[in-house]
Length: 206
Image (cartoon, rainbow, N blue to C red):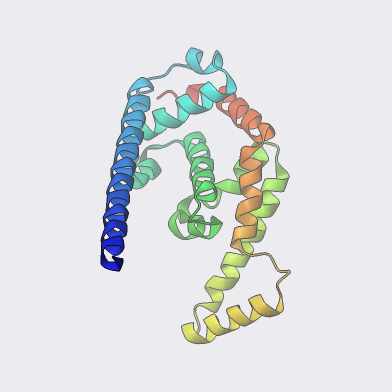
């Protein structure tokens, strides 16, 4: 009887896993289809289209137009984008990192070094000095860790863990990520970013 129960449970578990995998695959397929549809829709955009759009529409149009322009390739973006596009792309990348459940602002410092200099500039352009302050504090923490890692790795790891235990009140990358994420979710940020896009509309339509 016990063996039968175990077999039934195992069969149910396997069936559940198969259904879950199928759903995930289907969901990813739909996401890719949605992305391709957006890229096609915004392959070309005009100044008039941007200026007459709502804030959400203007941001969406520029985002997908820029991604289509370089086929979502990071290196191509650095070679092809003008300064305004690089600044907009910087915030897109930083927001994507901050909103990812598995990443923190530390990943931005590691993987997008060429964009780091644009973040404080862009926050200033948007009239959001609090964003610059948070980002600069996170950057200072990253540079501190980078300097520490030039020494023996085992020694540094031990020190960092000890510091975390002894100084629990000190902010970490996830704290800064959470603060930046709140900014990106705010209406103030969306309004400011849309205004930036519309003020420089001619620079985003090439």
